Length: 484
Ligand code: ADP
Image (cartoon, rainbow, N blue to C red; front, side, top):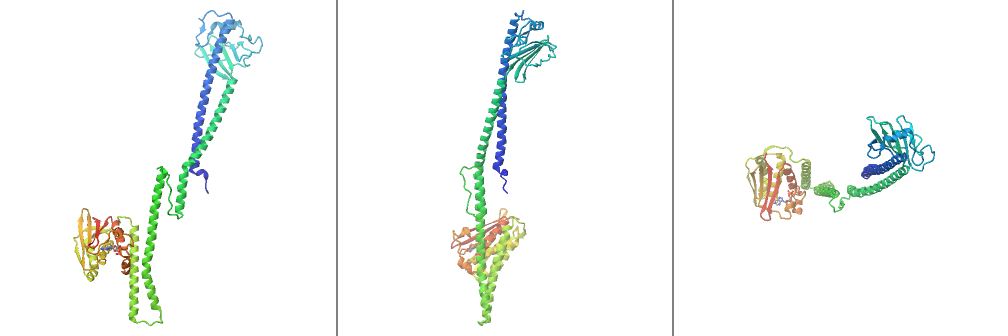
């Protein structure tokens, strides 16, 4: 079952949404804090200004105070000690409303209250709240001042060691309402921004994922058998284009390998069909009893069947050997063997054929030890020397030489036969490739696998085969084998 939340797009979206939410929350929180600090600073300055004016007005009403000598040194608000004495003696009247004695409702939002050390209210404005909490005294003596919130009021509170405590406050409900409105508008914009960001992120993630989906769809179609299809490139040389190029290259190689396999199977079947047809037709012919046959006739048919069977066996053996070479990792372990001995055996095997064709087989075989599998080496040299003799027109010479080359042994098989044309030369190591197919077909054992097999064996021991040929002059095959 397909789980959508497991997809890359959803995961990108989830992380994007979370990070965006945190960023917007941090931004809105900071903006809200800064705005409130700014607003509160303004309120505090206003409150202190009004407090200063209040004290001045109260002292003025009480007929002024003698001097500044007894003033507590508060930078902002002068609270003369004499003010306390007058308040204690009840000699000061409240501002505007005349204090609580008048009982009138004040329309002013500023309220105040003064108390002595015992908490006795000395003076209080009519609009002051019922319960006022006066500040305690500073432990180290002197003055204690503080700004605080009391419900929807902002208060400036003071306490002086000579016994006076004051609370001057301002109703700031309007500012608090404004603060709340600001918070809501910030939250609203934040949520809108977040939703916009989510939509944008979803679109971007989709855009980023689309090429991957296209790659995956194309790869699925190729896997289903549409082997010639390839992933189209955007041409921007992005990471995805690079991946597509690598995949296309892999598909090309896979396709080529599959094509080779197909061709190989077709060629092998074709090669097997000829001897099989001979076997079947001959055996069928011999089974027909109505036609009387001589013993020579039977003998001839048996010969043909035997030849066909031999041809099939050679072909199957070559195929098996080739398959084993393909599955063997290069550098498979061998034993120490003398190249001269292996070559001498191959020469003696081919000598009768060479003599029958009037070809002289010459050899220079100094002893040379190498590390390899002697049976596989025999297959290589039988093929090379056999080819030189087999494809020779007759009446000529084939030379086999062994030479030492720094850290390598070189075996050269040189003939003065017909040579190989430049068009055929690059292809003679291909499997089932024969220069003259019609002629080779008639020759048992020549299926075009010989050189392909030799190449696979030599390359598996870390060596290489090279060929040089001139039409009408002859060919030279060089096998370079690593020493020891
Ligand atoms: P085959 O089994 O037909 O010999 P090989 O793979 O051994 O197949 O050789 C491929 C082809 O290369 C041959 O069909 C032959 O035409 C050509 N060839 C190989 N060796 C020689 C040679 N020494 N001189 C001329 N032609 C050669």
